[in-house]
Length: 313
View 1 (spheres, rainbow, N blue to C red):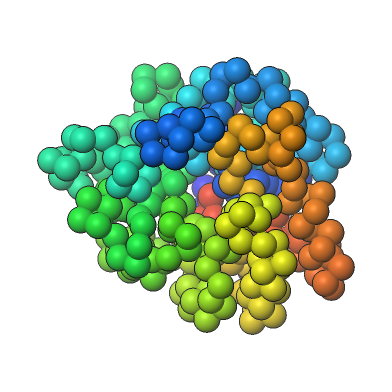
View 2 (view 1 turned 60 degrees about the vertical axis):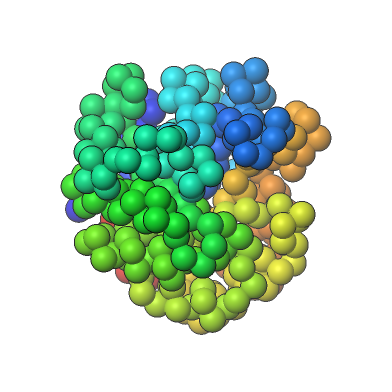
């Protein structure tokens, strides 16, 4: 199995990543089309973001960020490369299309097969002619329990491109809903479950759904840690412990999904480090040992990116 990750700074061996990974973050973003003016991370925030990541590298060994800003979300791969260089933290960029409110108009009259070819072109030659190759497809999404017709098309294209290139797919499941439908759609296009991460499951207070998804081999993303306005970290902790106790520690991915500049430490927010400074200590206090935490924060996201099924954590 290929051990190489495609980062914005070039190829990186997964075995060289010895510190934790943030599995779902945004370092450059523009969601003003639907979420308001605060839902941005602009070039003006770049220095503060790089400083945050550098601090986390020094304090916690942060080694890699999986950056899931895709087409139509304000993706800036050159900006990501600059952040990676200034912070010393590797960054994996993404491709794909977000959920329907952020789809460009042309998606409505373009086939899934043609969309997949567009993604394959980016993955093989670089995004927007930059030569910077995406290393993951995501966050491709849906809202509601069943994807819309247009979301079916973009998810199918993501799966087809993933099969063709060997990349994995990370989804956006609005408020944690629709994970089963996403998984069914992606696997029907030939993508194995272990190449799929179902997003925002920490926003869904339904342990049975988490167990069912994990049992298929898909990854379960608890990726909005710290977003107390959507779900309390106490509920997240309860849901995560239930999933770990059911034997699915190897299927979990963790992150904070920083998606507004107000979440940055420089603007008084909890920042990218909330996972390390607040949530993981609570997880340790609940009895989770350091080896399992290394699995949750390093081994799992690396297996997700490379497609190595490996031994259970």
